[in-house]
Length: 197
Picture 1 (cartoon, rainbow, N blue to C red):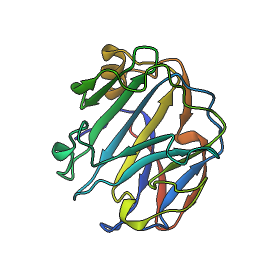
Picture 2: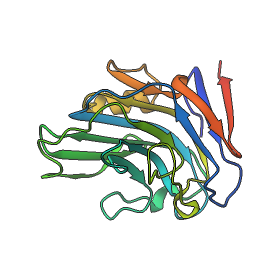
Picture 3: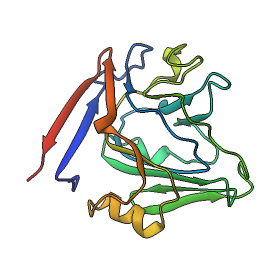
């Protein structure tokens, strides 16, 4: 599968087994978020996918967790060792979420965290679920696979914007976090910057 991005950052956790040592932290703090969109490319070979992303604050270590075993987010089609584009979009204003895989809407839901805001200033980690700010990792919840093109927006991306991101047709406005904001890479994780001209 060709990943149609001119330049993208690529994280590799080469072990097929999860570890509490493998993760990435960021240098940027998030603002308060009444809406968000998270998109990334991923490649995994085995179940469970584990934790793609976690966001913890002093008041709640599970402010936001994208974990690969969810009853509302089907992930079985991702376990084929091929690259897939994943987007999760949420609006507290509408109380809705949308889950896209490879540009297609896979699932959505309503009455989900309506009028709730994700508070800013916490710790974002790729690859681990935080049980305390920046730590408290459980190896059983870690991610083993590859991630590329991770970005988070402070708004709801439309279906056409999700399709555009997945097709490499630009980056919509409102990015609050991306691979360029990586602060530290921990454990058996490699960071690459590739140029696909």
